[in-house]
Image (tube, rainbow, N blue to C red; front, side, top):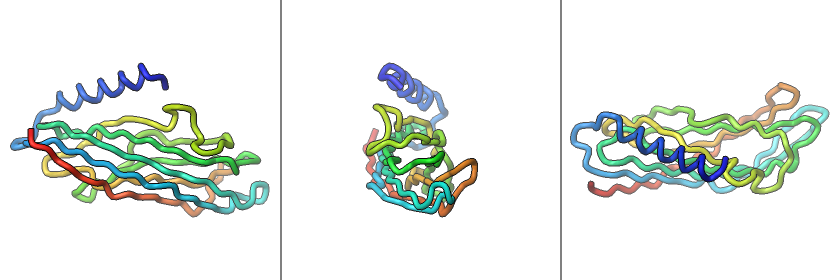
Length: 173
């Protein structure tokens, strides 16, 4: 994704979040963020691949403007897939949990088929921006990156979840 596309996506998210009906009494801007740090995982991926390891880290940050019920969420993930071989694939998806306990998937599922050392992606390839619905009185509490190996269409477990609880800050409008 080039810089113009990223800027266009951010502008579209910002304008979309302002067009949603404001909840009554919203008087603050909320910032939430968290970083999972780098975790290394390993699993068996079949007889032609054997034991394979990979590393994953993800940075989550969100911003909810005054009188909005949509948080603009930015996710930036990095991985080390250098051990992939013989058709093994590293799959990852991302999710967030709201303060009301609702857990939902956000963004694309990454299917990494190429062996690459840290950080494992060209500039901006591990980033995406989405809007996350945060109705009145709720906020984004945590983020999770889920990763596992696939070999010849077969998923090999276990599935690994790296979760971070978000730091919260608010500012009056």
